[in-house]
Length: 114
Image 1: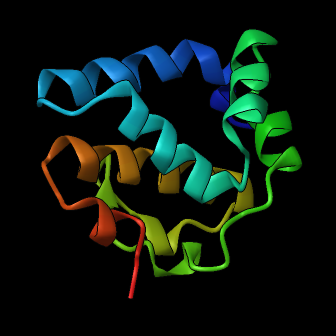
Image 2 (image 1 turned 30 degrees about the vertical axis):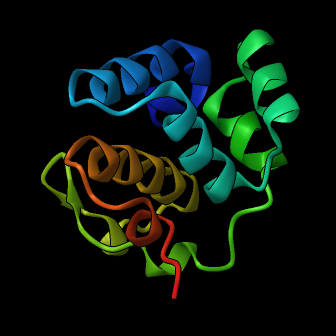
């Protein structure tokens, strides 16, 4: 099991927000990306952050967006679509979405809106 599976989402969330804000994006946009991927509403997301839910439990509770398989690209030198472990793939999806947000990509494209 990867060490990241047992990490709390809240411990990484602050880094997601900092990364986005340094590039002129907002915490609200980070939350929107996370909600899109996980199916959580804002209250559910905040509860997971407050409870310091692990990535494993976070994604177990999530209702992954049916369009998540459209997320393709490279994060940390790893092609997301080639990640075999289902939980690691979901974590990489989240990493890539936040990277796209920080790079200034339009929200409609990040959320794979037709």
